[in-house]
Length: 340
Image (cartoon, rainbow, N blue to C red):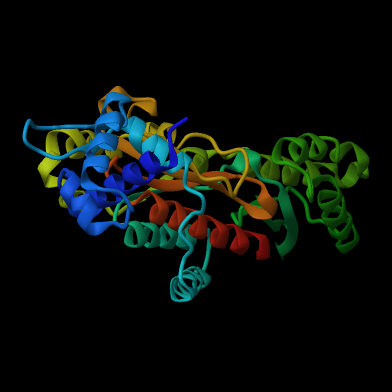
């Protein structure tokens, strides 16, 4: 177990290095932080931290910088995630509450995350397979033409036109609407599709062709997985701040941004919304991104994580502030999905 005093020294080194982008020396630590010990004690603590692999000396005459192990301990020992100010919370709420649909919400979320963290933000679209059916509506546009509307728990809305061989009576149309709602609403996509398959057998023979056409169209809308691998990326320009480490940090990240599958794997899978995951440097799935950290969490209605969002950036980042921003945006997006 690391001693509290050495942990305080490590915390000070991380904070200074993140803010100044320069290796941190013992003199600077004593001047900037109230550590309550002599410079000699700070030097001894730094030597011990270096021996244990929490900090390293990049150059012979330079100060120290945190290692991945040092960042990991710093993050693990955060007693509280830095709270967001009332003004920041209001800004997030106002910006996201203006969303007009799911696409707009995802795009707003990724822009907001990039602005708050000054990192590259990544937001995965809610996965269709994990969602439930919120509502089904059937509207007669003409005697032989129906409009089917499918609304999912992700906020996604699918609309499909069904052409019928023969017109449906008003009673048959009402019966179809009731049967579709009973079979699908409240069910997960896979279960709803299975339940819908039995609906035609329950209807009168004369209405069965129309019901089969409607069920087939609705099932196809449910099995459309185009959004499952979709992500939005924002804040790429923020990488310009890290020009001093272009080859080690920026170039690999630029290449990763081109490969959405890589970004999805970086974000990881979140099974519950609310818990923030931090993967630092070599902890990630790609060695070529060993100078990169990922802060991510799941989001979705009623604590059901339908997708992930987060940021990707160099290991030298403001972890407390970034974790707070990622968590706050995820909570607001989840709340919006809850209210839809």
